[in-house]
Image (cartoon, rainbow, N blue to C red; front, side, top):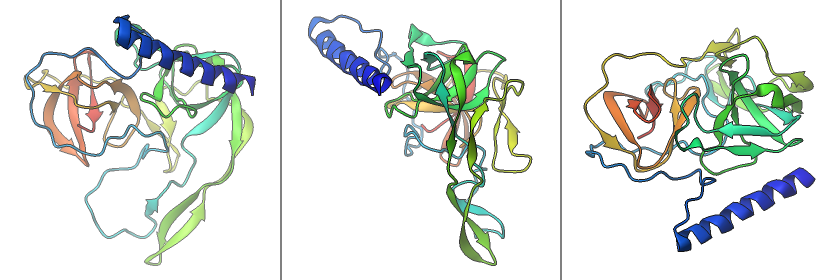
Length: 266
């Protein structure tokens, strides 16, 4: 209870600080939602619904055109719990981006609260999400995953699968309490498909940087592929360089501020 009170109070203090900053012009480091405007040539990308909301994202679901579902295809939910929650055994400091983190932004999940582990980047760095925060960003990276304790335990979740041409509701296996995060599995996240783990496309060079520039009009998560793992966060008014490739509402881009490639919803 005390840790939740600390979180609420700290966020209230941030809100007051932001209000004061608006009056006095003082810069507030704790602001995680905006960036100074960037003067770039604006181009047109097809607008889609942003994926800022916290929730169980597609994770490892392929993006496909509309079609009649096939036998055994999951049409809602997942066969496995992909976003497993853990208790923190010490304060976890989360950075929106890694290894480059423009502006030095960060926020803290206090000891005893919950955190979602998604995958290890290295033996120390892990991609995580904050289940207690609905603001952008809620995905980020801890540079010392020793702060993450053991799993909280999660009940089965419902999913819908096609069986004999009908939609049938099934339940995932539960996830037990008291299990530590996988220590020796780097750049690999939980999948709903056998063998239930899939590789994260962390940082690949996709060739020459495109010359076309686009200024973002909203915040967005950066992913390794359409509807897959979060590998960073892109802020409103940041410049991105679209390659022209689009898939399932996502566009492939190069993000100069992060020096990396990925997919986002423009």
